[in-house]
Image (cartoon, rainbow, N blue to C red; front, side, top):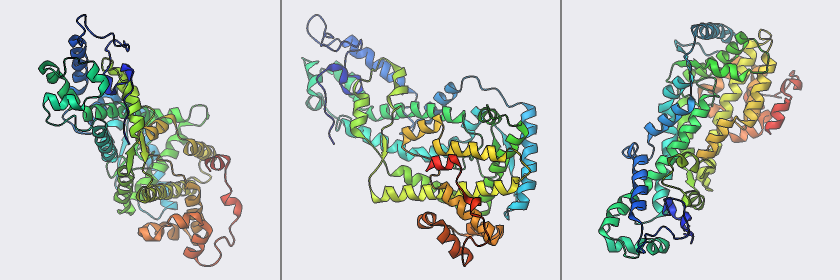
Length: 459
């Protein structure tokens, strides 16, 4: 795919237009030559934007974190009362889960995070997830102006410039212009990395205001053995629900603890999930035409434009068998984890938590639609983290438990080959029959598996 340059000067890639927005060729000086002051000013601005991240490769993480922290604004520390409430909820959650899960509670660290602490504590995992995507972005950026970043002399460099840019340089590439132009063209890759880092930082900042726990996005983001809740976001989640804070903390403590027990019991699960995420990311590709369009009118004198240039997303899955297989593997794992957690929490809470049905319904709506931050993240990196097959997975775990007990349900996690594959999720009743023997739903009320409104919306 080739990038076509437009006639109007404002559409040159990476701001090769007038620094003052004059697109009619009026940026020449009185003698008819190119205004070196304008060109120098643009390059200076550009260099200042990239200086901080130029040595960090395709994913300048310091820029990501700086933008993310700035986007948080005021982030109050967690109060002592919230710490005590979370710790109490975790203790009670362990007692309730002991009755509904065969996996024992291992010694884990309970954390109560502010939003900024979530950013810091989950940064390592996010880097592993996003680096393959950033690397793809960087590689594609190099292809937009092929050959311009090599070791070229002035004549060779002039030959490869777009015709419109040549018209702006009537005397050719002079030594002075060469000194300014060549380094800039050599930083094409870093421009893409910086733009991506700015938007990624904004996305993670937005996510930090929505997530309620370390496992809320379906991927274990905290260090192994750590359970964590974010009280400020739990309160935000509950706005308008009229639910007691104790019930809220307990519900999310149950979910977080169930996740932790699952990952502890199945040591193969965490690396397999991360491998699925990284494989998914590895097969992402860049819409070159869209990327060229976005940078076509980019103004080097406006650093804030970097925060918007990637906002509508250019990452998209490759239409290959490998990418489709990677998508299916990730969706299946996320669905199985979420389906099991929901089943376990429902059994553990039972009639003890009066607001359980309301909370599950709210989670169902959230799962079906995704929040604004999740939408922004998926647009940026092309990766959707919602478990689209949740209902089928939840039905399987609930049916196996109803038919054969919690031991049979939890034993499915003893080995990955025991869990339903995509074909099993497509035929939940058939899978359960194979696991339990005989008719899957003998003596089981079908009302146990009726879809809620939010789950119908999800489909």
